[in-house]
Image (cartoon, each protein chain N blue to C red):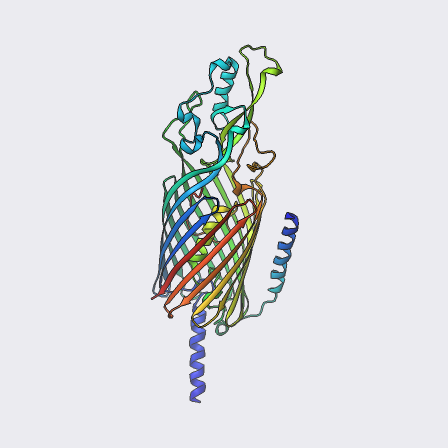
Length: 437
Length: 76
């Protein structure tokens, strides 16, 4: 009798505890630090990144979390350039003061050259020989600091959650301010199903090292800031399928508007110029000339897709997560992402977590790969040679190891590697600790 | 090659979806496993997931689907 009463009491406590804890996010006080070192092949980008986060409950209904992130980026990023290395030094021949739009080459040519400079974001003065352009690494260095806060309120009875987030991030050439609101609502008393709806707004400012063009088409020194905004909406359903399986189905939609061209990327445009001092020129006076030009993208990008995430406990020591995401945007990029991650308790204190991720993407409709047969853009139209908007596949592997030193303290190390069909490979190592208090 | 990869991906997704089709009502006291930290979609340590997402959005042409909170970067 006594034993069954104790059993009943335990059952009630367990039931209440598990009912109170929402399945999608467990509230607990914790502080965590994580450091990441990231490196790309071919002496490209290197990043040292650190995150410090704290999460604290104020009673059963309120949770506040804050995160500080700092990272240092160095190395180089590949882009089209003239063989003189103009963009690595000044990003533009125009900065050197050199002006090849000389009248000696013909009055019409001079006018055409000037006019050309006023359109298409042409930098430099062009060359008749394509061999004088090269796709190579241009050095860069940057530092980023960011802060993010998230406040969550839970309703006392149903434990529905309202989360409000704010974030700020600053780099030398980029500034981001974000706000987000998300609501999670349980649809049944057993909390086996919940609906999530959220919206976020981000205001971004990106620095362009070139200033405005003057009436001669020359870029002024000093640079300028451009804006672009992002609105992101997402709805999802989380469903418990059985005592060991849970899944989340989401649909998302986002709109980016403003200056979406990348100020660090160039393309090469081919322009037919007229080399004649008289108005009565013949076809012999027309010849192609190649110009270094700015990366040029539409001012709006609409994107959307769906994602599915599942988590299944295979046994008391193994949990398997899978996810799939479909993405499509108005630039013509379509992607599929499939990921598998599992957690294996090797001992009571050691947890192993391998990840395999497959990714495939189609190219934007204004992309030309630098190494393609047709890699030169025409006089007009949007243009980019940024491989991230190209057609490629990638696979990612990760190995994670956690050491649960106590119920409060956990150490972790993660090794990651990605290989893209573009030839880009990169590896990273994360290490950190999480302390529950 | 690319088309066949897409078909394979879709097949795998369909398998996942079908394997999770049956819904068994779960009572509160049966949720000890579901409440475990490794069952969370963000994992036991959400910061690791954030690092991963940061890398992927920096080096790939697509993003989204992982929630609405969080900041951005000018990742060149």
